[in-house]
Image 1 (cartoon, helix red, strand yellow):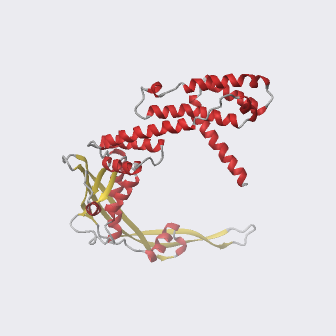
Image 2 (tube, helix red, strand yellow):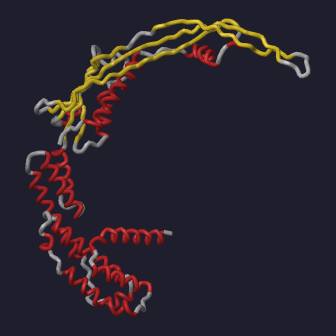
Image 3 (spheres, helix red, strand yellow):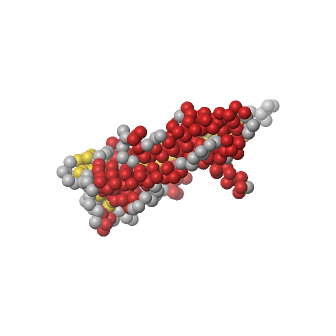
Length: 379
């Protein structure tokens, strides 16, 4: 089983490499691959045996003539990577030929370009690295982004090239917009007054926005930024300008119920049902509470004070419950009456902390949606 998995992996890797390089195949390359495939199926294919040596030599000479100068219209480093891909076709050709004994036996001057590929990648990594250092030395986020892109290319050409991963981190930090979210202002009181267990709003928005993966934007609390000495670029201020938890009001009303219920049957043949009208009076007590809140949010550029967002986000919480009692015959009641009667034993008005948290979350979800869909923290 292990042996099967190993060969399956080799096959898949080979397919992946082939698919990646197929767009670089020339007509001469395709001819060689087709002839090798024929010999793989039939080692005695006379036509393939006669044609392969010349076809391979033609393809080889054409590829060997390639130099960096062929791609001088490309950016530094890109020309060498392009050259490596062109040589990669020859490497694939080499691997396929040596895997078929009949093809290997008749192919002259079989060349493995792996050394040339590595040399091209080394040159590319060096050029990318030097360009990255150049841009990293300049001020501004755009230059830092350019530096990161070059370092990333160097790392792709030669994984772990010199200290490129450290420099990628430095470039990321220089390109990142630091957004500081200040602790929320809870109207006329602090969050403890409203019965909240902690000041969750500040941390919630930081977590949610960081999880959104805004490009090169990172969100911090004010205390975290201070402890890590992070310089702020943008500021988020959260002010709950209204937070009203209403009181519970009660209203009562009565409902008269009546229903004909079967009490028996006559002795006729066939028997007929006998009905009796039963009545009841349902007393319904309606309890309700209306509460409201408003969250103001301002997001602005610390350097110039310009607003990126400044708006109000309202929230409402309407709570109500109806309980009931009755007098008379219970057979006259509806299922809705019984639901109200049974809920009387479970009646509990929400606490101030429960209402306050629902209100704040209602405002917050509106704010979060607005930020996700329409706020750009910077270029």
